[in-house]
Amino acid sequence: MDLTPLTTALRTTLGYETVKPSASEKQIRLLGRLPQNRMGDWLIFVHHIHVSWIEARRSGWTVDISKLYFPLDKRVVFGWRVIFQPRNHADSMAQHLDDIVRAVGMSPKSSRSDVMSIPLVGSRAGMPQNPNGKGAGLTDHTPVGPLLLRR
Image (cartoon, rainbow, N blue to C red; front, side, top):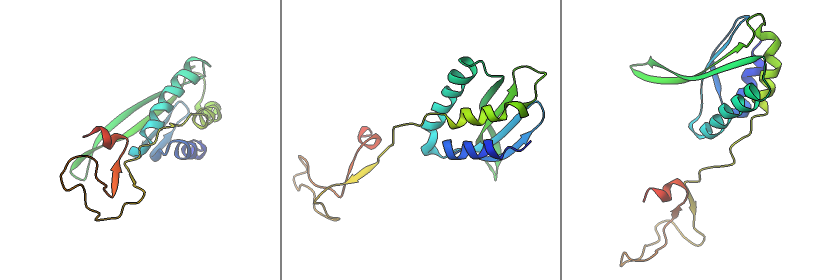
C-alpha cells in the first residue's frame, strides 16, 4: 500500500514529518516529528479527526494518536505515533486510505500565531532608554504576545 498521499497530506497540512511509516492490510502505523510552532494545528487536527470524522461520520476506521518516547544519542526524545485501523476487522486499510487523506486535508488550521517582538517605528538600535528608569522609554523591540505575559 502506497502511503505517499497520506504522508504528503500530513506534511503539507500539519507540518508532520513522517520518519518511520509502515502498513499492513489491517493497520497503518506512522512515527514522526512535529515542529513546535505547528502544535496548535496538531491539537486542532486531533480534535477534528475524532469529532468530525470518527464520531460524526461513523467512518470505517479508527485512529490512535500518542507520543512515543525512546532513547537517541544518549538522550530521551519523543515522536508522535499515529495508528489507523479499520473499525470492521474484515475490512482492509487500503479501502479507507482515500477517506483518511481527505480527513487530514480538511483539518482546520490554527488562526493564532505567536509574535515574539516587533520593531518600534522611529527606534534605532542602541537608542537610550529613559535615564530615570521610570515610564516608557524606547527600546529596539517591544515584547508582544507570550513575551508580554512573562513580565
